[in-house]
Image (tube, rainbow, N blue to C red; front, side):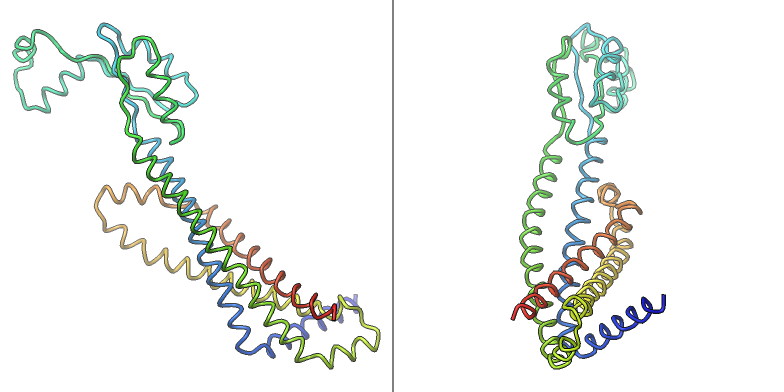
Length: 300
């Protein structure tokens, strides 16, 4: 037990000593990782938000199925409700639709309007809500092929545009994050290499007394991981501050904008998951950079 404590104390002291000797290069490495993780966090959060917006559109946008003359909505409602893409079905009779239309037009005498048009010109309608945005076109295609359905109307252009925007942002963010990851690894590699070179004589003495390579270079690897952890903490703080800054502004927007932003909210689980992802990714990038530095020096 004492031996384990002694080794742990030695590794932590050597790691701290290396961090102190890194100077401004430490900040260069940490800031690079922080920028990388901040952009990655925004990208991942935006991807989740767009997915939530797509799902909200899918649940809010109704597929309206207008039936053939003489076909009643209540007869087709059970069949449509059993479809796997359907979340809810509302049957609207032509009498109810006609009454609502007369009220909307401001006509007080419904019987007179009906007599003038020689009867009710409308047909029964089924308002069908999809379970997801991806199910809206599939559901519309199925409804249009059903017997008794005359016309199917649904607004899928907004869903397509949001999906295309999400895909485009994912491609752009993927390229940017890849470049920043390589940059962060290069900066960490350079930083660790300079620290190792500054302690070259100490390392040579340790090698002469029989210290193993892994024991010598483990503190430098921990330094790289520390860079990643600190960078992740900074990135998470910036993301949280940005969210807190935007929330009051979005709350003051019109109703439609608030409808959109409600779909852009992420769950508490996703917030915790995002923090863990940033922590793991930052640690991985820091460890990779330090491993590259140590490997190049150890092979000389």
